[in-house]
Image (cartoon, rainbow, N blue to C red; front, side, top):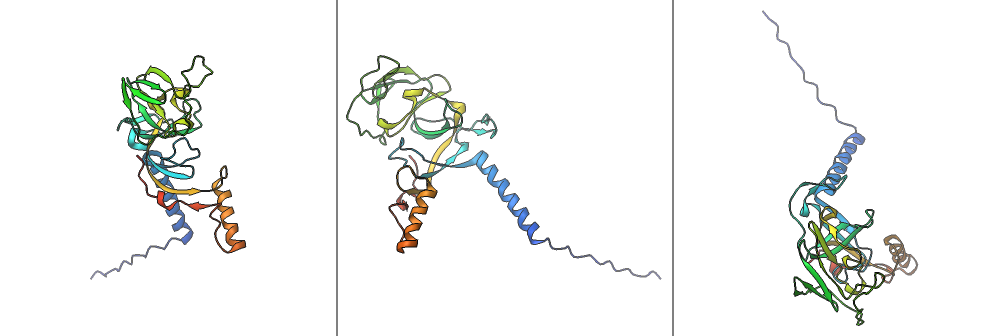
Length: 242
C-alpha cells in the first residue's frame, strides 16, 4: 500500500518595506519620465512677452504629442501626429540658442506671405487680427532702412519657407520674436500649450523661492501671510490657453 505524501507549499515571504517602496518609486519615476518625454511636460513663464494670455509666474502643461511623437534625445519626429496651426500657442527650441525654450503664438505657416504695416499684420494680403494681442506703446516705428533699425511695427513682406513658421508674442510691443530673429523650423517645436495648472505673483525679478520666503516671513513675524511678496492667482488656475 502506497503511503500518501503531503506537499506543503511555503508561503511567499513578504518583501521588506524598503524594497517594496523602492520598487514603487522606481516604477513611478520611469512612468513620469515616459510621460514627460512623449506626452505632457510642464513649463513656466519667465517673461511678459505673451501677456496678457500668459503672465510671469504661470505654470503650463504642454502636450508634446500635438506635433508628433519625438525622440526625447534629439527631438526628431518618430510618428507624425500633426503640425502647428495658425493661432496655436506653442513651445519650441529657440532657433538661435538650443539651450532655451520659447513660447509664442503661431502667426504664419509655410507658404504664407507675411507683412506688418504700422503694427497691423497682413497674411496673404488680408488683415489678420489676433484678439489676444495687445499694444501699449502708441509710438509707431517706421520701416527699417538698415539692419540695426527695429522691424517691430513695420516688417516684410516675406514668404514663410517650407517646414517653417512665423511666430509672435501677444505682447506685441515687448516681444522678441520672428520679426527679429526669423522663422521656427518644424523640428524645433516641442508641443502645444494647453492649460495653466498653477500661477503665482511676487516682486519683479524674484524667483519662486525668494517670493515664497518673503510671504512666509510675514506669517512668522506678523502672523499673516505677506501677499505683497507672494500670492497665488487662483483665478488663473485651470484656465485653458487660447
